[in-house]
Image (cartoon, rainbow, N blue to C red; front, side, top):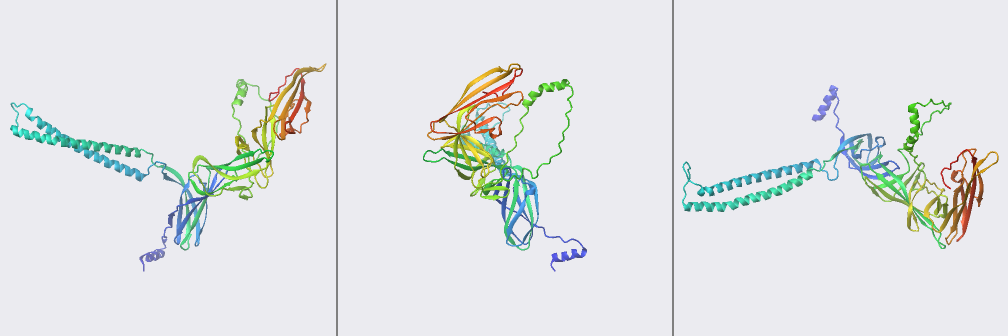
Amino acid sequence: MPVRLALIIGLLLLGLPVPMAAAAEVSLSSTIDAVTVFPRGAEVRRSAEIALEAGAHVVVFPDLPAGVARDSVRLAGEASGRLAIGSVDVRRVKVLEAEEGALDQAARKALEDRIEALRDERARLDAVIRSAETQRTLLENLARLPTRPSGPGRDGVALTAEGWAKVLDMIGARMPDIGKRVLDARIAQRGLDRQIADLRKQLEQKPPRRELRTEVRVHLDASTPVKGRLVVTYHVANASWAPVYEARLRTGDKAAAPSLVLVRRARINQRTGEDWRNVALTLSTARPLEGTSAPDIGTQTVTFRKPPPPPGPRTAFKRRMAPAMEAARPAPLAAPEPIAERGATVRNAPFQALYRIPGRQSVPTVKEAKTVRIDTITLTPVLKVRTVPRRVPKAYLYAAFSLKGDVALLPGRVALFRDGVFVGRGRLPVLAAGEEHDLGFGIDDRVRVKFTTVKRERGKSGILTSSRTDERRFRITIVNRHARAILLELRDRIPVSEEQEIEVATLELTPAPSKRDVDGKRGVLGWALTLEPGAKQEVRIGYRLTWPKDKEIRLHPPGP
């Protein structure tokens, strides 16, 4: 009977637990193959090939970024045999992350060992120099012996002249060799010093930093040896995309109609800590990080306002300082514009639009944004000129267009080109299919606009109860210098009274405006006119203000 089988039977007879084989742990090398980017955040899909024997296994995805939302991690895949997922554990771990130019521990140890060896070699050369210097000193002392005076108490070796000549010849022969050995050793030391300095500079580079990463451990049970592929999908927050546009207007002529080409692009930013290399890129209008439920609302009651207490010293100070404090208070943040969830894309889902970018894309984890092209829309615009001469006596060219089919536009910046020339930047709002929009393309110098104050007169009216009056009359002149007819939109205004005692009387509106209270703004008037080539159009506006003589009025905003 095999030893292990006997041991298992013995443990069973004694009622002790039988030790089971530990699950095999496999660290997977995975790659990112698809990314879906949202206006805020992104969903990343990684895949890895697996080959497992029958039994229990733990496969580990070790290289996910720290910003993974733990609850978003999902596992899927396919295998050649039965493979069951037991559990999925997600945890944060600290790993050594080598930055650009940083040294890992093995490289640092190799540099330190090399510096130590060079220092030992330099110490050996120090010993060579000391030995040679000692020999030189002895020979110099020996050469001085014949010149030393003899006297009482001095014992020495008496040499003949022939003997001293041999000694001096030996000294002369040995001294150059000693000098060469010292010089060679010092030259070698200088080379060693340079090598040590270079190696120390490399050691001074910052060591690899410890960085938080996310580790996903998947417990699997294979009934037979299997091969397959595991896919892990997770959400990260530090990514976003926003639409940007390029509008190219051709104004046309007698032979060609105007045309408007709208190029849609997306600007993608990601600082997730991992590069997206050669991935299938999809842009989604869904907003997973902007809440999932509508806010609650409480009860609102109305009561009589209690009279304020008489102002004390501090209350009076607060009242005096209130205007300055109000002026210094920052303006409230504007509410974000909603992003439409419907529109023409490669694929539409019920509650989001998906833009599948063709080909494979790479988006590194850097501060700079990456811009990708979505598509091009060709529109048939209607050209018109709009002027607000009370504000600026100039005419501006507009292209009015309507979205056809299933096309939808998200809000974003637009670069404007007119007949191939860049004229400025603007913004596009949310536009759904069928909506109309006017896009401005700068000043039209062939339409001349002039605003003239014809009359401005203040006086009094009434016999028993005098009132003050202010009568104003204006003339607007527009001339079309184009060789073709133009559609003209003129906007102006007359004051609107906010007080019962202030009366506004319209004296003249010639011709009559096409629309009043334009865009829901009280007192704003609109004219829609057609001007033939060379035609001149005059618009006359007049009104009178009447108010009690003992009061002053204020026009807001001030102006003619």
